[in-house]
Image (cartoon, rainbow, N blue to C red; front, side, top):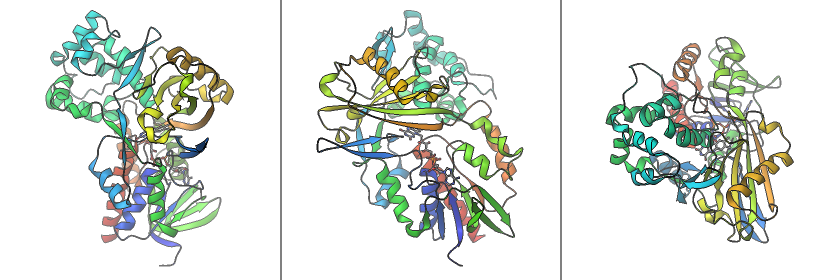
Length: 451
Ligand SMILES: Cc1cc2nc3c(=O)[nH]c(=O)nc-3n(C[C@H](O)[C@H](O)[C@H](O)COP(=O)(O)OP(=O)(O)OC[C@H]3O[C@@H](n4cnc5c(N)ncnc54)[C@H](O)[C@@H]3O)c2cc1C
C-alpha cells in the first residue's frame, strides 16, 4: 500500500473521529484522520491563560464527561492520562425562582420543601409511582413524558430549565426516547422513575471528569498517538467510491484513498460530504440540525461577587427573557483550573429557545450576560476578562422521530461498502457517546477488513 492509500480514512477529529482512528490503529489498521482545522478536538477546546503569573484553564466547549464510565477509564489508562473529578456534583445547581436562586431539589425530602413547587405540584410529584404509562408505541416529548409522570409544574419548572441548560433545547420538541433513552427504559423496568432513583441513587448527581490541563489533554493524546496519520488543516468536501476504494477530495485536490471511510462530522458538514449518497441529497439531514450557541466564559475577582458561587451553577428558568441558558461555576467544578482569587463563570447563550442570539455582537452578549449575573449573584464592577466561542449548529436536535429517521439514513447508506457514520447528531450527544461510537466504528472497520 502506498503512503496515500490506507485501510480507513476518518473525517473529523472531534472525540468521535479521534476515537475511531485511535482504536482502529490499535486494532492494526492503517489510518488517516483528516481534520479541517489546524488542531484536533472538535467542539472540545481548552485555553491556557496566565493571570498574574498563575495558571488559568478555560474550556471553550465541553467542561468534561459526566460520571464514571469503564470505557473512558480504560481509554485514559491506555493514553497514560489520569482524570480529575469535579468537586461539585452535576445536580448541585440552582434554579431561578421569582428572580432568586433556589437550590435544585435533590431527592424526596428536598422536593417536599422546595419553594419552586406549590403544594398541589408537590403532591403530584409524590404520586409519580402511580402515574399511567403512555400507550404502547407512543414516542413522547420531554414535556409530555414528565407531565404524565410528575405533573405539569415539575415539567415546566424543573425539567424545562434542565433541557434548556444542558441540551440548549426545548422540552416541547425534544424526544425523550432519543435524548434520554435510559429514562424511557427505566420507566418500564422499574414502573416508576422515583423507584428507579431510590434503587440506583448513582443515576443522579454524578461528577464531571476532566484533566489537570483541561480536556485537550485527552484529544491531543489521541491525535499524537496517530503520529503522521493525523492530517490537520484539510477540510474534506467530496468523497467518491470507485472499484472498492474511497477517494477523498479537499477543494478539488485528491488528498486520500482508503478502503473504508468514517464520517465523524457535525450534521451540516456530514450532509455536504455525503450529499451523493444521502436520500434527497444535502437536505436529508436538516431535521438533525441544532441551533447556534455561544459559549461565554467570564472572569471576575472573587471580591467582586457577593454570592460564594459554590456548586455546579445555575439553570435559567424556561420563561427567562434573555438568551442566557445556564451558568457553570467553573472555579468550583475544577478548582485546580482557576487561581483562588478569581471566579470563572461559563455560560451558554442561544440555542433552540433563542436561535438568533449569537447574531449579536460580543459587546451585546456580554452586556446581557452581565445584567443576569448581577441579578442572580450580585456583581460589583465589570468583568476582568472574557472568552466568547460561537458554535454554529451548537448541540444537534433530537426531535420526535429521531430513531426512525436515523434508521432510514442507515438503510440508504448501507449499500456503500466500507462507509461508516459517526457524529453526535446521530448516536448520542456528549463525549462518552462519541467515544463509544468511535470504538464501534473501529471494530466494524476491523471486521470489514477481515471479511
Ligand atoms: C458549548 C458546548 C458545551 C458542551 N459541553 C459538553 C460537556 O460538558 N460534556 C459533554 O460530554 N459534551 C458536551 N458537549 C457536546 C460535545 O461537545 C459533543 O457531543 C462532541 O464534541 C461531539 O463529538 P463529535 O466528534 O461527534 O463532533 P465534533 O466535536 O463537532 O467534531 C467534529 C470535527 O469535524 C471537523 N470538521 C468539520 N468539517 C470538516 C471537514 N469538511 N473535513 C474535515 N474535518 C471537518 C471539525 O473541525 C471538528 O473537529 C458540548 C457541546 C457544546 C457545543
